[in-house]
Amino acid sequence: MKNIMLIGASGHGKIVAEIAQFNGYSNILFIDQAYPKKTKNGAWSIVEKPDRKILLATKNTDFFISIGNNKIREKISEELKLTNCPILSHSSSIVSPYAQIGKGTLICAGSIVNIDAKIGKFAIINTAASIDHDCEIGDFVHVSLGVRLAGGVTIGARTWVGIGAMIKENIKIGKDVIIGAGAVVLNDVEDGETVFGIPAKPIKG
Image 1 (cartoon, rainbow, N blue to C red):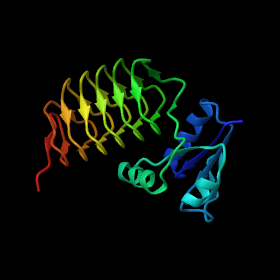
Image 2: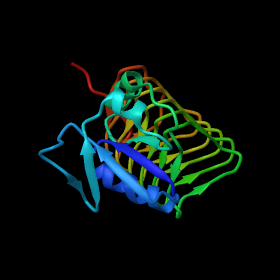
Image 3: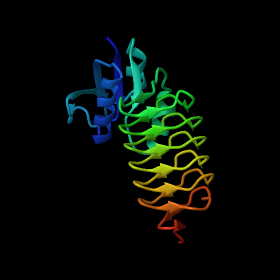
């Protein structure tokens, strides 16, 4: 029996739990700050609040942060000092055997990760996203539903790429960037910028 404990019982958490099932986990439990007021997340039980003592006392179990917010995932990974964090990939995703994927990363349904792409730890490649050849995606990045990254795109840590955004080949996106839904990125984006539109431009002020 394969056991996994998911940290964060949200709608995103239910997606993670289902993908964990596809990856052969038969015993799936959540820990969440909402416990004991909330004891179920979809078909799965919430059993406790997140605490490092609980994680240390839990044997023969993998752990996964099932939270969509990039900075919160980073904070939890640092506070709980997580080990035994698998890569979870939906059965309908296509991941090149030549791609490199970091621990704790989620690859959702219908996503494509092409040859020589590199994805950091605790990242999210959401439903039907496409990561082309030689892309480099940093730690704690969230690539949202339907995003298209052309070849050679670089994305810095904690960046959020909004639903349906498209990024031209060889573009460099900095750390802590927000790219708006449906944006078309044709130029490099500096650290901390928020860009929207077609073509994408920084929001000023």
